[in-house]
Image: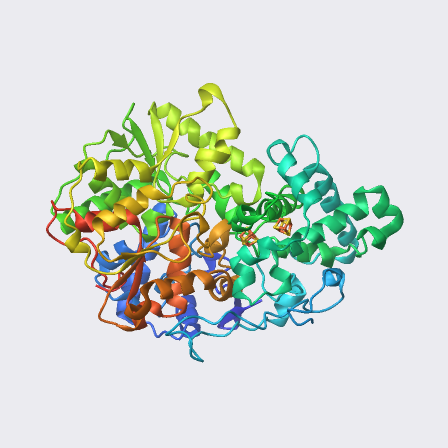
Length: 101
Length: 538
Ligand code: SF4
Ligand code: SF4
């Protein structure tokens, strides 16, 4: 089982690198996961993370990427690797997208 | 571990870490004919070996097929055998006859092997020969259910040891087939190894409660709970529609109100909800075309009315039926005249064919494909086009469920030929097409290392077809190339394939649906609808 360690507390990730318990997310967790992804979080990243998390809290499902893009006006590929959809969800502590997406 | 050409049927029960290696892959056409153009398989982690069944080919398709404790192993085998018996009972009504024929009449002529893209893409790996899987099932069946098998064992070909490993390997092997039924189409006896594969998946799901997470618990079950396998609820759907309306106005200058829950409409249009999340320009293009043609149509926002997927048809009869009947119910309540399926192949088959046998009379609502309707709008000039706007090479992928399974071959071609001067067919195409490699759930199975199998093996032949269709144009980065795939699942598989081989970045190959091409060429809209810029960059 993979995990990240913050202040000597182990936080479990599932085999695909997503948080096992979504409730364990906090900004420190986001920092730790992003380092694993090879990303250093900047203010711009946080705009995206906050947007995605707020949307998720409201609708229980992640927003369409097009909407993230339009609402934040940020270059997701540049910020979050070549597979931004997965990276954003991972770092924001949301589940892996499911269905034909 | 055997070399892939040396593998024998009797090895299926062998005590070994890995039955076979995928040690050879079909060479790809230019410019992918050089070394170093594709990533290697990711290494199987030791922790995976302990937990899952990696002893087939090192790939894990079924992430819920986990090793039980030793005392549980016998129970597992027992349940499987019980389930196998049920397949041959009258209650398996729709499948009993073709299954029995396939089990009993195969003459091992191997015509079907030649037809299979998975067998082809691995340079004839024995494990993926379509009848390898069927033969394993036959051996098990003979051993338990025939007098000869019980008494004489190997003389009648019932000579394998049946333990957890044997059955688990068969379970994994059931997810190395796209259920595309290209093999069934060529069998001189009409036998169907694809259907037989699905029957194996059925035993696992219905008797053992084992199916890939993304198909079952985060697929069908989520759909029945939230309305969609993506988890999109009514509120999220309405939010997405509002976003699409704004986007349409920005792109085309048109103010369109997407009709929703309109009682007694002629057409209830249903989409694969994945479209709203990943390709909103597709449902938006439908709205633009249907409004321009003045059709009396609507979308539904009721619980089972907006997501037309039905993953059950890939692995579980009970799930398939539950979903299909509730989808009919949603259409009934709205009082529409017919359901029209958008660009989703398996939803076509599920609603128009599979569900057709699940209920009768009053409970049914007529189901149609969007493709003939769209062609009718083009043919009668209710929509008019300026084909010069689609001035780039286009090829067409034939979704198996729409084309081979339902015989809808010409409408999409007629449309493309009318609106795309640069159209060229793949070879082969039509009912002889090869699967995109994402069929039967592969496109959405994203756990562990399964994407490797999809990207390197199951989509390989399709990727090669795409390269060959574009020929010399592939190498010319300045030319935009478009693979038209009118199916959400196929699009998912093609998207991942193009990303895996970096074909968009390196060679400017794009993909999308059919309606987007139509809107792009509409003579009544000035701005291009397709921009070919990266959708994830501003
Ligand atoms: S083509 Fe038909 S008869 Fe021949 S090996 Fe395949 S399933 Fe058997
Ligand atoms: S159904 Fe398709 S993938 Fe499966 S064995 Fe037949 S040809 Fe191969």
